[in-house]
Length: 30
Image (tube, rainbow, N blue to C red; front, side, top):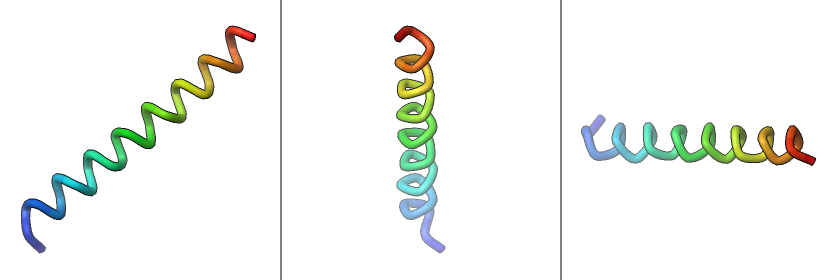
């Protein structure tokens, strides 16, 4: 596997976790 693919995969996982945290915080604030 190329390192570029690993970087894209890790960045996608990071974006997904940030999106989940944002939705969780929105539920918390409402």
